[in-house]
Amino acid sequence: MSLPRYILVAFAAAFITVTLYLLMHHLVSQAADNRNNDDELPSIDFTKVKLEDEVRERSRRIPKKPPPPKEPPPPPKLNVAQQQQVVNNMPMANIPNLDLGMGGDGPFLGQLGSVDMGAEGGVIPIVRIAPQYPRKALMAKIEGWVKVQFTITPGGTVSNPQVVDSKPKRIFDREAIRAILKFKFKPKVVNGQQVEQIATQTIEFDLPDS
Amino acid sequence: MFWLKERWYSILSFIDMGGPVLWAIMVLLFVMWLMILERSWFYFVTYPKMRNKIIKEWDEREDTTTWFARRIKEAKVSEASISLRSGLGFLESLVAISPLFGLFGTVYGMLQVFDIMAIAGTSNARAMAGGVSKATVPTMAGMVAALSGVFFTTFFKHKAAVEAEKLEDRMQSH
Image: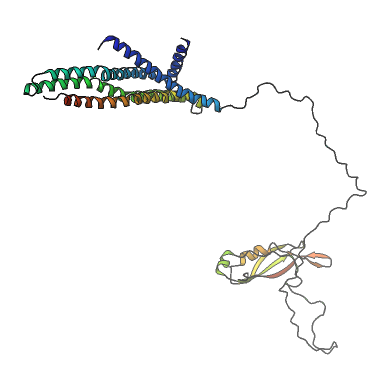
């Protein structure tokens, strides 16, 4: 193996190495070139954009004021909702049809015209509040009623309610009292004066039709 | 001259892109091709002369059938085989090493990427790109080096085996 041969071979090897490196660089830079070609992005203009100096006002038409009314409007009516509902369970006067003469020889029937309606008479509720059906009773599907005695104040509100009778016992009492306290009645008027009145109401608890 | 300078700068920029491992791969590649060219020279220029000389010497021998002659033949074939196979192992190892050097460069580049990530955070992709190219370019260089060497290595191995066989066949007893 001679030295000149080695030198020759070394030159050739160096040449090949350099060529390969150039090839690799070419490969890499080609990718870079492609990338550069791709991002031809829209150029951003950094120069100052001249803004319009003129202040533009938005033209707005103010609507005309309506002419003042000739006379002031009447004060609004107080619309009080009044539920005029006749109590269903009005006691029926069980008066036998007596064929009696109006003469003086018939039996005394008391003073006509001044029939005392008793504690219950003339009790007209203005506001009726449906009682809350007790959950327990609803689940057990119990129906019933509660008879409540209470005092109607001169203002028409209810005070001092008491359960007189109920069926079944105790289940509906609480709700009945709670409901009756929210009732409003027409107060009794005696000689133009509103007076207290003791009244009795029966509150029925009926299940909705199933 | 200017052209050469330009090439040289492009190589330098490539090495800058891939990190210092590319220098090592370059040296590796140079040695590998030195070996390849030297082997090629040997196979196509030196060895035919050597072979002809051996065969001629053999043919000129009076005695080619005795035990002694056979031993001489074996010795000649062995010598030829040794010179045929010399340097092939080294060449093979060079081919095997070059992708590993590429991997080394990759690791080096990745370390740079992590450094940048530690400083600039993961959001700065532009800063990381340098490290990533440092990680990928040496891999490519190692691959190219190995690719350029693998074919010749295989070819030379095959050539060495075949030539040794042929030499033995050519040295006939007469």
